[in-house]
Image 1 (cartoon, rainbow, N blue to C red):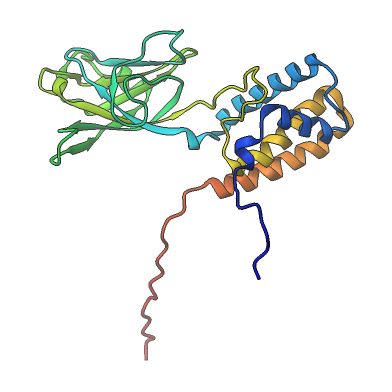
Image 2 (tube, rainbow, N blue to C red; image 1 turned 90 degrees about the vertical axis):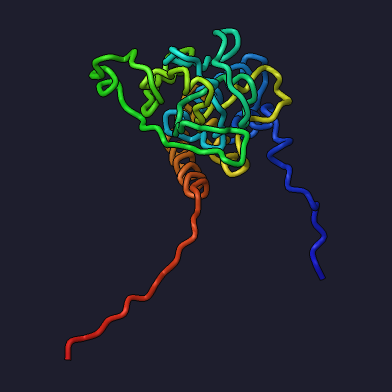
Length: 254
């Protein structure tokens, strides 16, 4: 006879910021007793999310879109938020007509016949600053074949080479991008922008950060817990692929 269970798998959906903070404080042997402690913990949680960005821990934020190309325009900007500026016009994909909060662009393709069954993609080569700087005439027009990504404080820009000509301007550049993790704001009853497999290391990481301020004697132990939880989450977060093992025939010399 099967066990009687809840039938739900939504703990992470209802695990709000105030619950995360309470759990982290309990791990350092304390309790939230003031508004400042909530604010301090929320600040630490957001710093933790920034640190995850440096580790590349936001691949659940991957999305895609199509840049509407404009003749003679090589650079297309994607701002941190609408308050920082107007992002490049995009169509389709996961972001619709506007895209904000990009951390990086992973791949780009020159896409023809986007909405038709004859759609055709040609991969663009991602180049670094030195390679782009070495291009003699950056205003050369044609079909884009390379792209250069710059990451600023308030925006990410994609610069194409060659610059789109009149023929390319009727087509798109399709990009796969990774976005930044959303902030934990002052609405403490909201959940975080983190998948379930990262919940344990998120709580452990916040406890480690809080220990540095309120329980220095627990810092080393909590750091070990955090790194251990983080390693397990990273291992689980990888993309799995099919593996096929083909035995090799071996004919010994006689």
